[in-house]
Amino acid sequence: MARFYYFPRPYPDELIGSLILRACQHLGTSFTEITIQLTGYKKSHLPLSISSWLPQIAKASGMDEQELLWEHTVFPYVTRFMSQMETTRLAADLLDGNKVGNAALTQPGLLGSPGHRFCLLCLQEDLANFGEVYWHREHNLPMVELCNRHNIPLQVDRPLINLTTRRNSAVDHLPKPQTAEPLKPIIPIYIAREISTISAECLIVRNRKRPVDWCSNYRSLLRTKGFPQQGIGLAGLLFAMTFEETLGTSFLRQARLAFSPRNQPWPTLMLRELTNIRFSTPKHVLMKSYLNLLNVFELVLNKDAIYLPPGPTPRDYEELDAGYVRKINEAIHVRKKGNIRIEIAQMLRELGILSTYRHSRDKLPKTKELISKLRKYGFPEMQI
Image 1 (tube, rainbow, N blue to C red):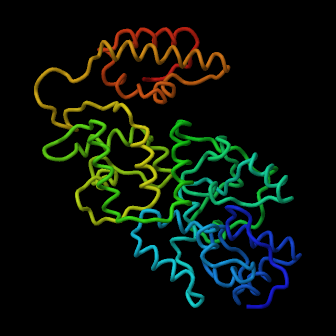
Image 2: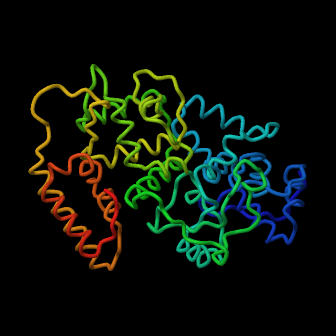
Image 3: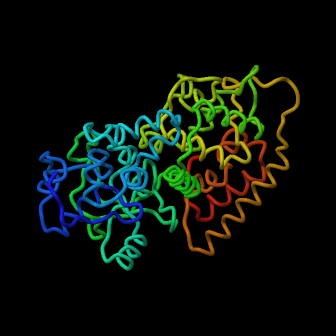
């Protein structure tokens, strides 16, 4: 590696690819020339989440290798739900100057994403604090649509049409508001916020536990929240169906985590006793987000999904009906005050009402009457 008389140090939460782009600007040289000096290889493009050549980059920037690995790559996110032994082994491999970085750490931020992302308010703060802008790790994790610090939708730099090509997974410039557009979340804001928060936490925590313990925790939490049993275990098919309905098939497809509820769905597999299947961090993030938000289950009571023992229905629909009317009226008041338009189905989904209303509307006469009035007097019609 050639000797650098000057090489910038990374800013807080800056991705290594962003650091190299800033070095090009500071030194007035090309990306290819920088990578030749750093690595000995001629590279015209690299992913933002590069994990190769960490010792060389650490030496050039005057940083500790471990600090570079944990604070400026997506390594802590990717390994969050791995065992301590596997995490330690992988870290040793990445910090071995004779080995090339693991491909699993190179492009995880692009999975389930329409492109490279940044926050306009973070950009303004970076300009005020450092005099320049850069790419943040938090913004470029899978499925993250909101800034965790400012709670606003991220900007997307450019659409990624074909994520399988290496050049298209790279970026050759720092964030540019002029060429970006707001990311349009395809899930309710409260779910997007939870995903953003949990994803950011994955970058901070360094302690690891056995993967099987995570699955055990998920089962215990479901039982605590009163999820129905089927035989001696949880009702797996019912769980997969409600999980899919809550997050939506469009979002799951974009995240590349879509599944068929009746064909070995991964959410159900994560609840199995002593499972030896390794689940990726995005799957754990979705599972944790779903369980954290699930205070009252809105279940699809489908006879094909779960066997319910004979007897009276476990739900008080009269009380449920009154509660739904109250929730809807409160939501309408908030939206009118903020001059916010919203489709009826989207509002019911965000309130946790849609599933039950679709399948039990005749048992919810007051809710049904209110929704009919909303459709009649100006709210957008929506097939419910």
